[in-house]
Image 1 (cartoon, rainbow, N blue to C red):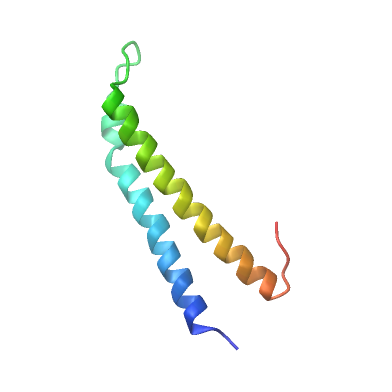
Image 2 (image 1 turned 135 degrees about the vertical axis):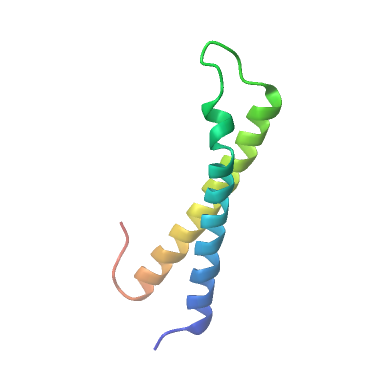
Length: 78
């Protein structure tokens, strides 16, 4: 029997991962515009560090939940 809380957690986790990906996508043009012969400003690096960490944490949380669900169903892990 499906666990509604688990399904809602999966939905929320996916929304979180997509939200952080959208935030990264929003700064894509800024990063693409960096001069390859120049330097990257400290503030830009801080912003990238913060956003990439948020993205990594959200993606790993989603992956962890999926693996937990797979294990509970006997599908194993990869």
